[in-house]
Image 1 (cartoon, helix red, strand yellow):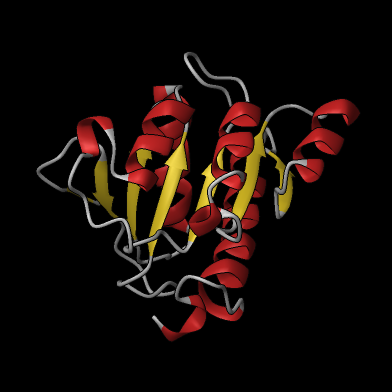
Image 2 (cartoon, one colour):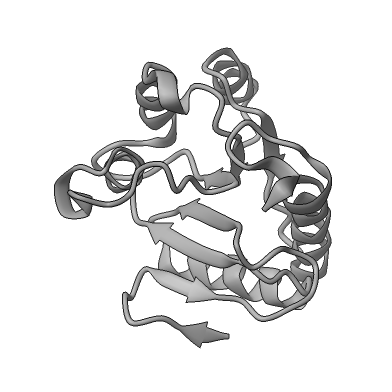
Amino acid sequence: MKVRPSISRYLIEGDIGMSGKKILLVEDNTDDVLLTLRALQQANILNEVIVARDGQEAADFLTGEGQYDGRDTSDYPVVVLLDLKMPRMGGLDFLRKIRSINALKLLPVVILTSSKEEQDICECYNLGANSYIQKPVDFDQFVQAIRTLGLYWLVLNVGPHGGSEG
């Protein structure tokens, strides 16, 4: 794993993903960020991972505001991996915000959380989440979930912002 100059960008070396496709990981817990990056590496997924520590930072990244002022906002990640419980702006508020922006309405968002609350699941789908994955506790199961997620969203799925064409 190579760490890029910005502390929030990582390049995972592997062979499943396509290097031009970015993943936006929205997660406030450093241990969970490292666990997810390690799982991506173990799953042999090759993609740049941009890490936002809460929904506000992720929204700013996608809209080119705040610390990301001037960023090319046409360069979308292929998928957003979103935790729910975060400071400043949580996952549900992030979903509400991006789904209210025309350019981001169709951006694939996968909820990756430890919550198995039926209310969270229903609300995420009602707000436009594309998938809801409860993080397995076992690391090997988590790696398999990440491998399957990567295969689908990075290779098989054709999305509105780049899809499988890279």
